Image 1 (cartoon, helix red, strand yellow):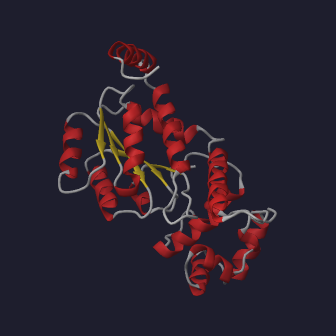
Image 2 (cartoon, one colour):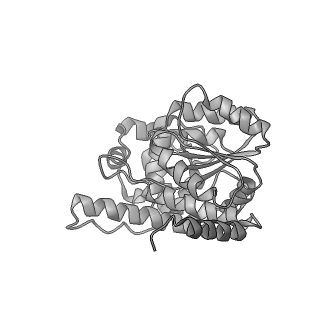
Length: 286
């Protein structure tokens, strides 16, 4: 579920695959292959190197080099190993689904994978405790992830006393992290989605140097932000349309917010106070 090695992974094909990759220094291309394999864990033991290369959008020699980097003689040896450690039947064919339906079906699979990961709630609970204790709580998300950060911060502000949204890059972002640290912040939450901006990676490195514990919601445990995250919670994005879809990361953000609420003893009172004020001001149409 996370890069926090103290937590046992759920015993599913995807998590067994992820365990195979952990501990290896992978190149960006190899991380892309690993990510694709985790997303299609049930199918991978039945794919040729050419098919896997097409799935990951890389060259066939890259798949061979990836297998060697994992310690195998080549891709056939890796596939033989996968058939032993990730026993599964090939996924059903998409059949007569059109491209729009296929995109929806892919997101359903992403959500099912997330549900499997959440069978072990401890990583999310640990993250909730870390974030609830940070006063203030900076929430970072740039470019494609900006809306994820905004949504989390919008709702978190109803229960957390000081949430600071960082959804615009530029030279001021380090200043805002410094200000949060001076005000007492102990952690930072980051939403990171592809394509991963270099500025996000640099900002997380800066936050770590400033002493903040970094919790990240990312599309993959192999995302570039992983090395600067103390606790990474993965949720895959859909890639079947011209622009990625992020249903699973959005839902994981709400689950994480629920965990934050569980560690804020006055969360319910704050929500009731907000509702009373909203009613008095007529904020919402009944």
